[in-house]
Image (cartoon, rainbow, N blue to C red; front, side):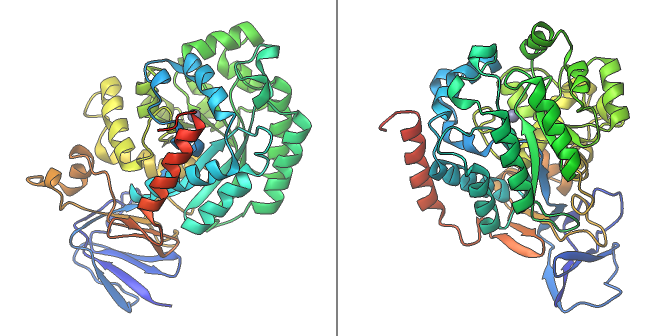
Length: 451
Ligand SMILES: [Zn+2]
């Protein structure tokens, strides 16, 4: 097996504080050595990759997404709505989703993520109308084909309009069907241990679309099979009001009451917490996926990331679904996090390194992984390499800051588990123009337009 030395990068961010300015040595799927400035690999190498034009990052890790939503980006009826009307307008459109639609949407989302330096992606898929029983199976196939590491969550909705929930009745499922399918997916696909490429998690959608019973039963099933739990929580004040009216509880009390306040759980958004709730989440080790673009787009609020972290909460970054971002671009999302969080905490506390730390080591913790998210010996060889050759970087000085401040939006090269998945800014083996043509047609059909 060849040992490749990524020699003397323009800059490198390890997410550990260690110096790797002399480069990184990769063998097979793993990082086997990091080289300090001015040094050479101690254990030898067979190949040299001259990295003098590249800023090297640990592959970025996306902690919250809904891949299927790439089919409903910038849809006029919901461009200017907050979360609840945004959802009630979109549910009937999403209810028409087919397996082929999801295959295309997943390919688009994962290709976009790869091109933006992402190597591990979580998805939250909760739509299983009749005919969509194979949704997660379809997603596994696409992820394996593209070679992206994924944590696919089997979502669910059980609380329809008839019972006081938000989603239409046609999109909710019977709890027994959900639990049986969850178990099937874990048994069929979930990989354990370092280097896992496909993992399964369980993810009832949100307090306003599931019953307490399915929350409790899902937590028990996750415990039994040792898989992760995910849901949306504390995204908007509307949601908080719903919880008070429906369950007589604030969101974190509700989470606790259904057995979810644990380190197995990570939450999408996590915005509206008070001080006591932040302390409880920290003590439990419950993670938060910060989704700045979506939170700004829907005017949901600003997550309290620095206080969450100080309390012990793992904090990661998520692009969120493409109907509320509407881009699946991880490096741009890190820029959004940097700027949004500066509005809350000031420029000194929220540095580019801190924002990049959320999207790498922080996101890895959120997803319960210790084999990715940093550049260190023994870690998976998941790397994102950016050049600063574009016009937008001309005249910039500090290379790492320039990535975020000048708005890098595309990686030059991306490696996952030692395999090149992006080369010269293109996804290896993917016909992008063809994908865009068929995906656009599927999107038009889904919203009922003939454009
Ligand atoms: Zn979401």
